[in-house]
Length: 248
Image (cartoon, rainbow, N blue to C red; front, side, top):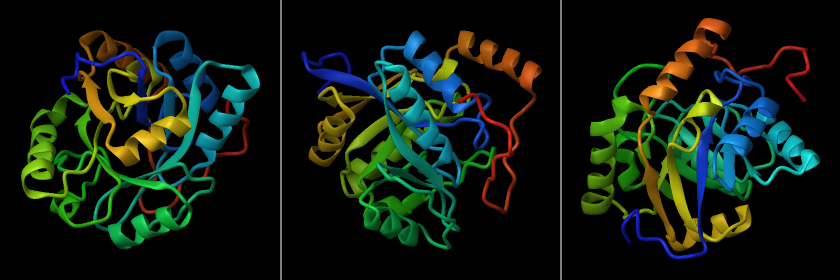
């Protein structure tokens, strides 16, 4: 199905987003409010590095405020073999030596395990599982990663998945660290709710959509960096938020 050829009943989700509970620039509350006001996304996932706490707070805030935006609790898990996205979990997971251990832990919690930016070769603390997507029991793969530096790696991810791999369901995500970038790369899915999105992933009724971050978004990100400073994720340890209340 072509990215522009979607029938009634399909909607948009962005399942790879960060808040200041890891290396994002805004609180969980600021993130969900901005996305609800500025995008047409129906479902998002907060996937902070090595903690689900920001996602749990974001979901609670969105429900309490009655936002027309569902929040899936997720986490980007650091492993010695590349990052693994966990979706539909209810608690934080630790770091793991191998991607297989992380995937198993996600599944034991009843969640879904996604391969994010599997061939990203640049820095920024993004580690990729590379050719392990051919054999590891992922539930889906991210083949449209919103960073402009992902042009070649996105194409490689789709090529390997479709021609040499497991033909996993493919999704698009922004990997936004500031909410103005959310939804520029996204996932089309059949359904409306977060529960229907999960079913769509299982059934392969999803498709990557959207584009890379736009020049306008990059400019807004640059202004945010000048205002807040570049977000720093403490390498080598689980992220632990400080004692202040983060916008909730």
